Length: 374
Image 1 (cartoon, rainbow, N blue to C red):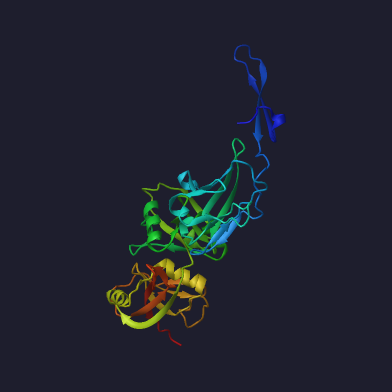
Image 2 (cartoon, one colour):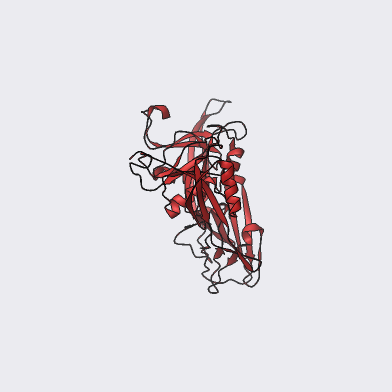
C-alpha cells in the first residue's frame, strides 16, 4: 500500500482515454483511466546479488548469497523457498542475528554461513532434486521489510520416460510418481528447453512439472508434426491432470558413486538375486542417465534396469556399437524377463557414516554383452 501520491513514489503513470456516448442525450464524452504502477523501492539494507542464479549438483553443498549493507537494530532474517506450482512459500530458517530456528526437511540441512557480521547467506548441504527452485532472503525490520530472490539450478539431464505398456499411459500425477521411482522428478519446461538446445529430439509428448505437455524436435519430419513445422519445443498447452495421458519428461542430477559392468548371463530375476547376494540393488533409469552424463559411462552392453527395460549408455558413437549416430542412453525396450543373456552393471557410492561405523551403499544394473558384426 503506497502513499497514494505518485509524486512521492517511484514508478510509471499510464493514461488511457476513449470516447463514450451518453445514452440520455447522445452526446459523446471522453472517459479516462489513470493507473500508477509503482516500482520497488531501492534496497536500503540488503546488497543486490550480482548473480541471481546459483548452480550446483545433487549431493553437494551450496551457499545462496545474502549480504547486508548495514546491520539494523532489532531485525530478523527469514529464508524461504517459493513453490509456484503449489502457490506456497515455505519457511526454511529465521534468525535474529544471535539465535535461529529451522523449519522442515530443508531446514534440517540448512544454516547461515556467518563468515562476517553482515553475512546472512544460507548454506544448504546434501542437495536433493526437490531443492531446486526460487529462494527468498527477507530482512524484517519493523515496517521496512525488504527481500532479494535467487534461483538454485541443479546441473542434470532430462530424459523421456514411458512404461512397458507403451506410450501415453500417464496422467500428470502418475508421471510425477514414475519419475520419482526412477531416481528423478518431472522436468520443468525450462529444463526441457535447455535439453532441446543440447540436442534432445523426441517425438512423443510428455508432462512437465508445470502441468503442461510438450515435445522437443530438432529435426522436423513427417511422422512428428510434419515437415513444415519448425524445430523447437512444441506445446500441447495445459491439459487435464487427471484425465489426459502422455509420457513423462524426467530430470535427474549426479549421484555419488559409479556404475560399472560385470559380465554374466542372468535373467531378470536371477540378476536381482545376484545383486542381493552382493548387498546391492538394481539401478534405476535415472541413475544410468546420471552415470552417462556425469561419469561419461560408455558401454556397448545393454543392461536390465529396475523397471525391466534394457538400455546402454554411449558417449562416443562408433560403427560397431549399435551404429547409432548420437551419444545418449539408448533403449532396447522391455524384453522378456526370462531371457538369460544379461550380465550386471554394478555401482557403489562412497561409504556413509552410520552409528559410528561405515556402510557401503551400492546399486547394480543388470546387463547383457552386445555382439555386433565387425
